Length: 148
Image (cartoon, rainbow, N blue to C red; front, side):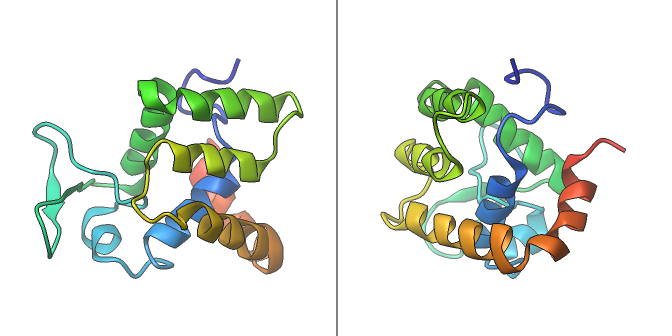
C-alpha cells in the first residue's frame, strides 16, 4: 500500500508538477521565489510564513522545495478531508480511475478557491506536463521525485 513513507509514490508526480506549475505561475510567484512554496499551502501553527500582499492569508515558507513537497504529501496522507483523494489514488492504482479524477478529488477538498481550478490544472497536466513538455520535464521529475 503506497500511503506510507514520503519516498513512495502516493500521488502521480506529474499531477504535483502540474499543480506547482499552475500555483506558481510557472515559477514566477512570490510565494515560490521567497518561500519555496510550490502549492501556496497555508502556514499552520508557528510555521514560517509569508504574508499575502492583500488580506490576512499566511502562506508557509520553507527552506527547500522538498520540505514543501513533503508537506503536500503529508496533507494528502493525513488530513481527514483528503480521504477522497486517498480513495481516488487507490482507485487509480487499481486501474479504476485516471489522473483527471485525482485532480478533481483534490479540488473537492477545497484546496483552491477558484471554482475552475481543476479544469485549469487538468489542462496544464494533459497538454503541457504529459503533452508537449513531457520530455523536458522528465529530467526535472527525476531530480525531484526519485531517490538518488
